[in-house]
Length: 87
Image (cartoon, rainbow, N blue to C red; front, side, top):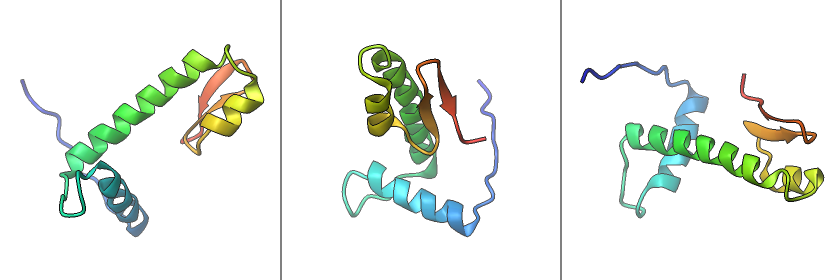
């Protein structure tokens, strides 16, 4: 099976985000995970975050869900939708 390849332009801000995310994904301080692992972890986290929001939005008051779970990327908008604020 062929693998789609892409190149990422690493601005200073994106490099800093990769470095921070790498520290979260790393097993210990000596570990330097490949960027593909960091991207996989970030994508998995985004998908699981949306699933978690879907699961709890009818179980708790909307303001509680927003305070607990909203991020700059994904969040509950009223009780009607989960929105991505990224783009």
